[in-house]
Amino acid sequence: MLSVSLLTLGSPEQLTGGYLYHRRIADLAPAYDATVRFVSFEPGRFPLPARHAGAVMRQAADQDPQVVLVDSIAAGFLAPWLAVHRPAWPLAAILHQPPGGIDAGRLRRAGQARLDCATYRHASVLVLASEALAATLPHRLTRGRAVVVVPPGRDVAPDAADGGDLRVGRRAGLLCVGNWVERKGILDLLEAFAQLPPDAATLHLVGREDAEPAYGSRVRARLARGDLAGRVVVHGPVDTRTVAGLYRAADAFVLASMREPYGTVYGEAMASGLPVVGWRAGNLPHLARDEQEGLIVELGDADGLTTALHRLVYDEELRHRLGAAAGRRAASFATWEQSAQHLFSVLRAAARSPR
Image (cartoon, rainbow, N blue to C red; front, side, top):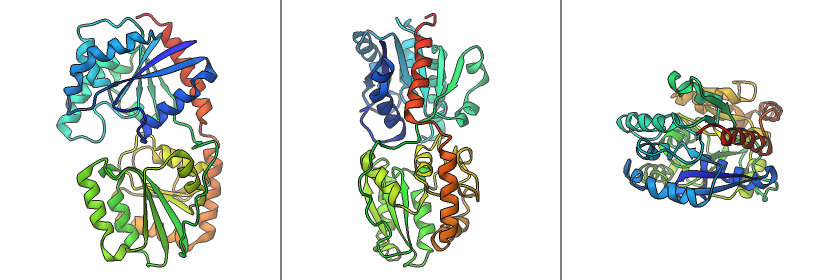
């Protein structure tokens, strides 16, 4: 049986893209004669978690792995340790974000990028969550090193909870799944949605409200204004069965994210037969095409975002046509079982690679 130790940051149970990816892969591991056990850096201000790299690697050693898989969110914290130690096992890295990450300021990203790449140079294989991430890697990092894309699965959960009536007496129910962080564009969405007639649609927001406390406060202040009263339902973080039910009950999916390395929720929504709306940014243009599986708006075009929402709310035939096309296109996306099978074959090869 293949034994994998996965190094990450904080609790593996967090309900965000990379953590959900790892959890699904770990749950599927036994079906592919593998085990995935987590070892976590304690969260802290950058770069303080790096102080605990030795303890983290000792915990990994206790698991007697055949390969250590380093999550991109923790890669930089391992770099100082790797500068003076030689790991006892082959290393692989799994990237859900470009070197340096996507949420921090420019100086922090530059410093973290150097540390991330220092760790990746010790890995025999780089596993990318999307094709879009390949363009973010320095050429010297990919030269002579295996780079493979293993995207997240399109399937949300094996069964779905009852999503209920998302329209709530209006023409359409719109769904947004994303934590309240600035790059997800929740405020942009609310401003665009507020321009619709009050009886047009009900907007449902799913995701953590405290991921960026200052930004979350701005979102709550916007929701409190009278033009959105009774028009937006805040669900907070929900489990996979619940979000699967919401996908099935919605009329369209919208997320105005400015930077999305993959955009798992877009693929999930499309697989549920929903047309998608979002900025022409990140990985969305690789998943959905404008006027074919959704309405893709130029980044920052607030009026265009409002127009896209208006069209989907008031043109039922357009919704159905784009939604059906989205479902057909998503059928070509990998399932979680296919992604797990691919990943474990890659990690088996990594386990056999020279240290």
